[in-house]
Image (cartoon, rainbow, N blue to C red; front, side):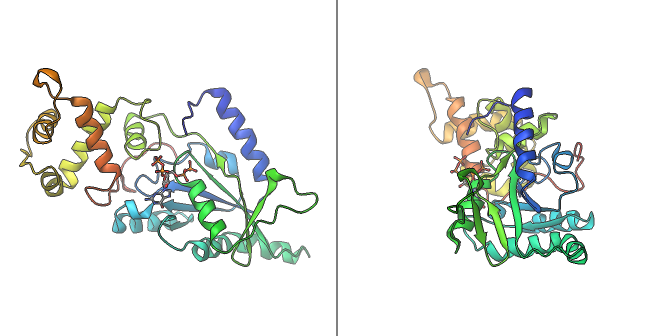
Length: 288
Ligand code: G4P
């Protein structure tokens, strides 16, 4: 999905999400486990206000396990309910249902005291594009849930998916814009595929990827391209070496840098260097 976010689009997204929020008890904010802070919408708290929230670190299969645990501890220490999921390869229904219960216990207890009895928790999935919102919804819908929307008075836009025994999920996710304010955030969003390849120069993304790999995955990098890179050498020389080794040449024997760049980025996204986490809680991050 290619969305160029202009102020008008942001205002519209915000309005639509505000409408969706009126229908639910809890928000599932989905982020990419490889970049949990950089893949959050900058105004999320402002938009959802005091609505209970569960932060879902999705794509945990692509992130480093111990670092994801570190993130979860970090969020929980801030009073944020956070869980990790891999919405493609594993069962997620019970983790999501449990987290929703945890997030809404206080509200439901308060309601009970006021004589308001509700058995079902209603939830909305929210996040920036490409973090896996639709995948989560589809996985939950397939795993044991019939849609409840075909009832009189329930319009198509308000379909609910039953998740487990106590949760109903709005079948349309809320889509918000990504952060734009810092260059490294843009590079991380691009490298993980959250923003499209024409927004940030791919050569910068590939250099960012190589610097990360040299620092964190040096042996795997050498092994994957079967090159003994000079650790202290110029990153730009790595492009030449990969191009030569892989025979990525154009007419006149020039190295096809575009192809080298695409290859590096694709290899990172396809887990050729194993799971990667591009940021940690103690890294300096903007906002939020
Ligand atoms: P969105 O609704 O938030 O925009 O995201 P969507 O579900 O469309 O997912 C974006 C991409 O991320 C999809 O890949 C999807 O398969 C992948 N994805 C979602 N959840 C997970 C997960 O838990 N693990 C892994 N490994 N991948 C996940 P795609 O269709 O190939 O799209 P793209 O990669 O070409 O953008």
